[in-house]
Image (cartoon, rainbow, N blue to C red; front, side, top):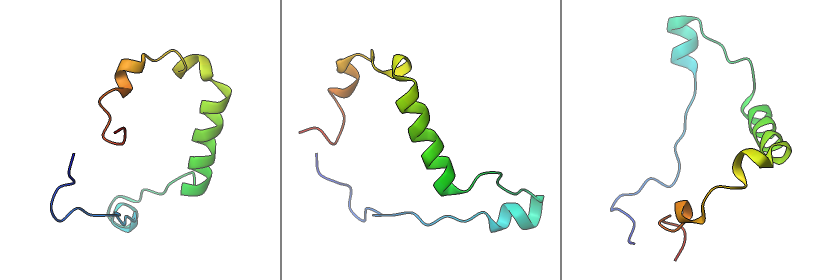
Length: 63
């Protein structure tokens, strides 16, 4: 499958508007959030290991 024209290779995000207008502040840094997510998946394989292979049959990264 060809990629769409003008594809963005990355997205830059920040939460300044949320902080300034709503007073929202994240409780977890991005790095810590990624680490926590990976650790959760490693500790909970029973939640995801039985997913059907058919779910992955149509993924764009499989050729």
